Length: 326
Image (cartoon, rainbow, N blue to C red; front, side):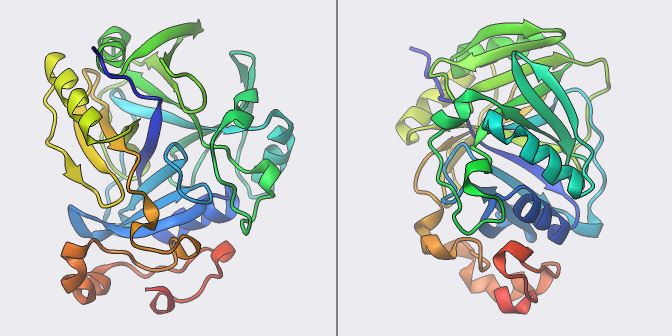
């Protein structure tokens, strides 16, 4: 039996300046800075996680800020075009005003009978806020101390839009490996939804005649789907292999366990477990306030901190100098 995922777990992208990145996602979008760690495969690079008040799976967008040493990416086929968050329909005007007051250009459209606000972050990564009744069904934890009133806060993921040269191969993997089903079409957009349905369950596919994209600043690195535990994760590994895809072993990412495989259109997919979560190494009320390292890197803390770029916490978390918050 083919396993199925309830939907998105997280989305990981590549940013430029770490301070600009954190300020936008925390101070402007009102997401909580739930974890500040490093890329486990490149310890000279931060890994930031922004999510709801507890970092609930299905709410987190994460970044590798490459700073001034990072090359610019190029959007194209085989990449995520937009990452969409849910908001309540009555919050649409609030968000238009909030973003425009911060100099963000917002495009307001309608899609599948829902209001869509599309804009870009400081590095050009596409984002959408979807005014949907599904927002109230989202199992999220609000951030009571955040800069956005709780009633207007982002309510976790709505879905992601993937740009591919051909829709059918990617659609086949969504169905055969992840348990997605085709739901509808709007223009050149084909919508697929996980069998569980609900918040975070949507993947939209659009065809593009652009060349294959190049990973770098301003592009999404991978899209992660949720699974309960490593036993189910093994079933996903079997399903990827049965579909003819190379898939990694299970990798310990401290806050979840992960496998990775590239779908036929070129987008890197991850399947991540819901546990153990972000409070495994920090108290819930201290999430994101200091540099967290996996146990195997603790002996290298001094050297790692010395090579990381200077960084101040966002204003909504009190700001301050880098040394104060390491």
